[in-house]
Image (cartoon, rainbow, N blue to C red):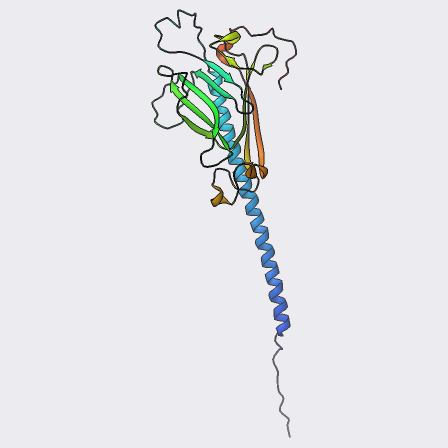
Length: 262
């Protein structure tokens, strides 16, 4: 009598083996997600920093162009500045700690706002102002007006050109050293004069957490003012500009053989 044989299929996974496999897959998934998130955060942070540096360089280029083409006509020059003239010229630096103010007439004015009716000769003012909607922060503004209608006792309407500025310094060269006091082409020893060189220093904040300043705290999760500054990196640019029309003007002090640039 033949005995029948029973064929059994391969044994399946046990519940413990399935749970272990799921745990391993979850661990790998979490690790991959964390790595991808870290990579995205780094790329976002670098992108924001790069954009901030570009804006900083843009503001510096605008400043350099205006100063390079600055002009001051002597009040005693009856040929170019006759009695019946209807405009004035100026180059003035008002130091105030880390927030200097620069007022000048320039022949390289470029409108910040598109289609604005402005000529290339303009009265330009640079200064730091409190940021609108961001207490404790400051922005760099540039105001322009036609020199034919400019009233030097009133600042022209300005536009923000750089956000979250820590400091803005404009220092004129006096011949033997950098002048820490006021330069004013309308009075004193600097009357009717342009400095031979002008040093510009701008420092601005960039949030290291990857959130650009300028976004309200209730939208970004980043506080404003001093709390934001604690999590921010400072980017600083410096340059020296030589006004082209200052070549024939005498300096305040006798030049020295060794120049201390900074």
